[in-house]
Image (cartoon, rainbow, N blue to C red; front, side, top):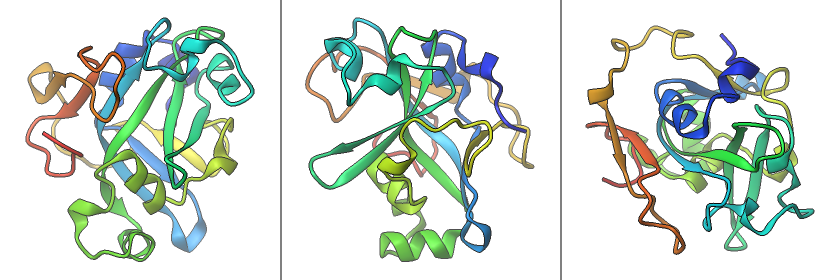
Length: 196
């Protein structure tokens, strides 16, 4: 059920694609929330848009640590974004989870997001962290044995396995540097993505 360390050790673009259809889960007892990953973005070594581009700092040191760990950062003084460290330890690469299809704990998500509309619960990196209550306290944690986990696409009954035709590859959004790189991936036709 849990994605293995070897899964995250693949090249970052492959991980970004293969995470589509997997699940991000926050185990909180009665307030457990779970969503199917429908949109990701890859951030690579020597990528001007990656936080690791400037080298290792106190803020971004998690990016250079073990794969399969959460990299959570605060942006615009009000939002959190959730990434998973990928590739090779020391390389500084990660995949940003951009959108989820909410599946479990929807009333909890609705309360946290202050909306009843399902398509607005997790359709963006800041929205999904609010819906799943992911904050800076999760920065650096392992996704293998804590309350925040990533599950394989086979963990729950789901639509047919994804094929290449189901994945759209396009340029990243919401950034200024290297926005022309085609490192954003989403499930074709999915109504929960952040933007077409």
